[in-house]
Image (cartoon, rainbow, N blue to C red; front, top):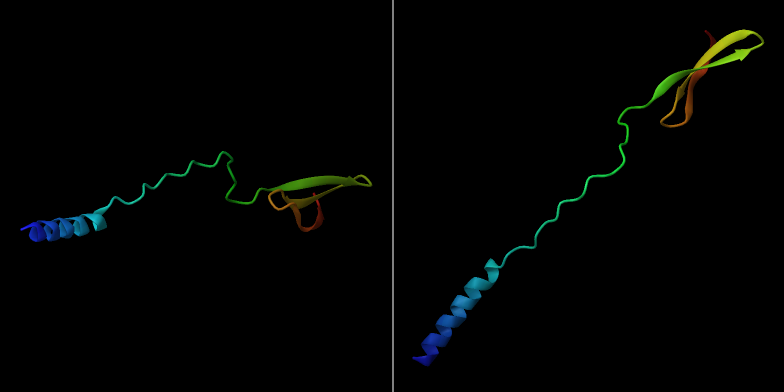
Length: 71
């Protein structure tokens, strides 16, 4: 009788162990800074010898786009 009870308890314990609760997944906090998704491109003007020139500048990557042209 004791052997039956012990084997029954062992079977129940083995059945319960795989049903343990999984670890809780914590949500990540949102980032504090906002990052632009598209490039910020604007015209930059320059006066050379009384002639106005313009050129596109990408402020996101800090690169010039194209050449100087008359405005």
